[in-house]
Image (cartoon, rainbow, N blue to C red; front, side, top):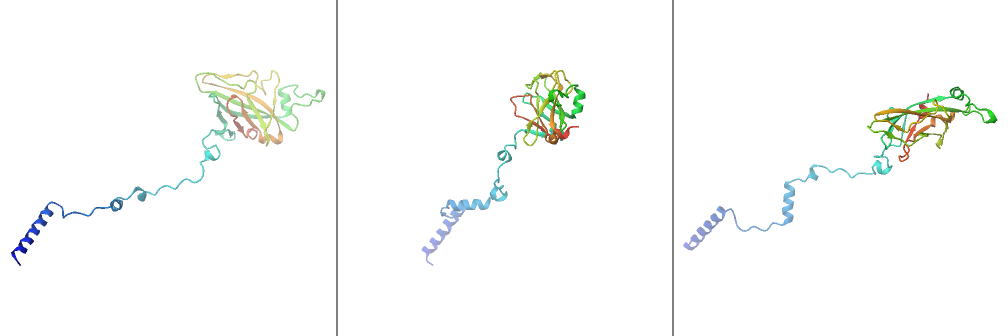
Length: 231
C-alpha cells in the first residue's frame, strides 16, 4: 500500500469518528407526512379503538312520538292512590275524596218532594238511573288565599263511550246532595270539601268520570273510574 492510500484511509477513519461523536451519521432522507402519521398512530392507539362507540339511536323518543313523554298527565284513575290528586295552575291541590250512590228512593228520603209525579213529570231519578254524589277535597298549601272559578259548577260529570254530560241534581236549600252555599276560594294553609250529585244510567256507571272545573285557563283533567269507586 502506498503512503498516499494509507493517509487517505486514516483521514476517512478520523472523519467518521468525528461525525459519530457529534450524533450524526450524515444527511437523512426526508420523512413523508404519511409515514410519520402512520408511525404515530401505531404507537398511540386511538380512543375509538379502545372504547367502542355507542350505536346511533333508532326510532323516535316517546315525547316526540306521542307528545306525552315529558308532558303532564291529563287523567288518572281514582282506583289508584296516586291517581286521586291533581293540582290546578293556581296551586290548589284537588283530591278525589269519595263517591256515594243513591237510588231514586234514597234521593226522595234526602229531599222530600224530589219524586215529583205531578203533570207526568216523573221522578228526578228514574228506576234505571242512579244518583252519584262526588266529594272533592281542595287543599291550599300556600300562605295566600287561592280563588277558583267554578262558581256553582265546580265539577263536571260524564259517562259512556262518548262521554255525555251527566245531569246535576240540585234543589234550592239542599246541602246534602248539592253543596249550598258554595265557596269561591280556599283559605291559606287550609282545606275544604265540595260536593255535587249527578244522575247516571245504571248501565253506564262504570264509565262515569269527573272533571274538576276550578280553573277556566287550565286544560281539562279527568278523574276516571269514579263510578267503579262509588259505594
